Structures are given as C-alpha cells and as structure tokens.
Length: 260
Ligand code: SAM
Image (cartoon, rainbow, N blue to C red):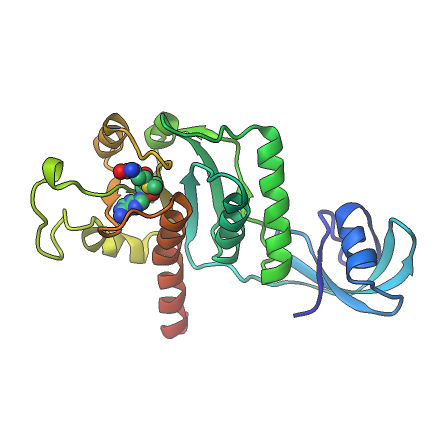
C-alpha cells in the first residue's frame, strides 16, 4: 500500500496543503519529493491519489489526481467501551482496535478504574487512531468518544444493539458450569444468533481490578449479556480485543464466504 496521509478537508480536485504532523511525516520521515504520488484520506471514507507539487520546510502542496470512496469497514458496527490500560499498553490497545475495524471506542470509567481519561488523553487516542489508520488502510477513523461512566453506559437505551460485557462466571455465585449451548456457559452460544445478525454490537470490559458485584448486577438487570472468556484472567486490552475479533472478524469472514 502507498504511503498514506490524513487530511480532514479532502477536496475532490485541485491542490491541498499538508501541514502539522502529516507534513512532518511526508517531508522529514518519508522524505517525499516533488513528482511522487501518495494517498490522502479524510477519515470519512474518501481517499485520493495525489502528486507532490511543492515542498517547504513545514508544508507540502499536493495535486489531487484521482478521488473516490473506498470502504475497508466491518459489515457490523462494533463499539468497544473499556477502561484504558496504563503506559505503552494504551497505544497498543487503540492501535489494535483500529486495525480490527472497530467503529467507536468509549473510554470507560468504572468504580475501580485507575486511569482517569481527560481531554488530553482523548486527543492522544485520536492521534493514535490516525496513525494506525494510515498504516492499516482504513479510510474511516474509529471514533473516540468522550469518557463515559459505567452507570450511564449500561442505562442508555440502545434500540437494536446487542450488548455484551466481559466478566468471568464464578462457581460460588453462578453455580457449576452448564453444558455448552446453555444460557450460562459463556453467554456467547445463547447470543450467537444476535451476534450474527445485529447491525450494531456494543461490548464492555472492566478495569484491572475487575467490575464490582454491583456493576455486574446493574448490567444484568439492564439485560446485558455476560460473556465468560475462559478460565484464564485476561488483561483489559486482551479481553476487549478478543471480543472485537469474536464480534467483528467472524462477521467479516462470514460475509466474505457468503459473497455479500
Ligand atoms: N481480578 C479481576 C476480576 O476478577 O474481574 C480481573 C480483571 S481483568 C484483568 C480485566 C477485565 O477483563 C475484567 O473486568 C473483564 O471485563 C475482562 N476479563 C478478563 N478475563 C476474563 C475472562 N476470563 N472472562 C471474562 N472477562 C474477562
């Protein structure tokens, strides 16, 4: 894939001036030269082939050669709500969700959350989304919303949305494991039909310290589906990525094999 650059205001013809981090990438990292062709995308589904016509110290001018709409999105809208992991794991997490085609990410605040996402954090996540989209070829940016509290997330009416939350079943609380396919084994078999047909899926994951019994009770009372991901305890980002793969990639592969 050609080098790709993000331009919020992409025109269909004429010339575009790149500035800021995108110009820095083109001029100083990629060492672009006049006459070279690159791809521009606007994060709203459009991409264009453009030729570099001028380079200055901090800006570059490009002429649009071809403009079109190219979708590399999942056949289902997947929203992931999760607390942010600490340190480098945050970048890894947002990068992988972007690559997997997740539609939106909600920084989630729960009772035991450690990282409290402010506006700076949200802006940093949005920049990671742009960088990951450049690399993976996505033309739609994963939306990073304002932070949301658990109580608000689970209470919001969600017409036509399948809602799952990851939380291990406990033998003490839930009784012995049930045969595969029962409602209680993992939540997934019982909800498979909904997952394969829903146009929108919302998945939520708890923080490193886990969801409190009250938070679990609130979600179940609002008819969220609890999903057990097996007997090992996964990191926040692993649990969220597994759910994004289960919900999104399965649908993608199914759509491809059905030719739809
Ligand atoms: N000690 C915590 C607990 O018992 O819930 C562990 C939290 S885990 C590091 C972080 C989050 O990942 C959990 O709140 C849950 O949402 C999800 N998670 C991790 N392993 C899981 C599993 N095996 N099944 C379901 N969810 C899991």
